[in-house]
Length: 156
Image (tube, rainbow, N blue to C red; front, side, top):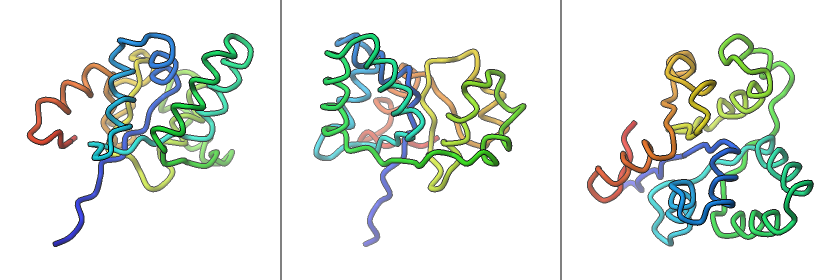
């Protein structure tokens, strides 16, 4: 019997920052589910996103930075390398905010995720999802999808 592929869930920095800062947030639930022994999905964390989080936390909150390092040990994310300048240029014009171009370029580095989770609805929107061919959901929408499916499966 072939092994079922666990869905890959690419998360934006805002999701992890919310999970760190707000203990009862939907983002914390998303991260907590990824810590389970039989987790329903695999978190994908881009090196670009990780560096962005570390830079923000080192300046603003050493305590949250320590919590972030603990999260990384618990969720054991699949990592994605930094995008090349060419990969970033390739997404220019797909997403509105220049700062989000490396994040989107990272999400497109193989293996491509089944879904991108970001609470930045202004920039990571339906138009971007259509252009890149990957569903984009907010954290609450993603959790609604997970809990509504039998056995916690995910179908984009």
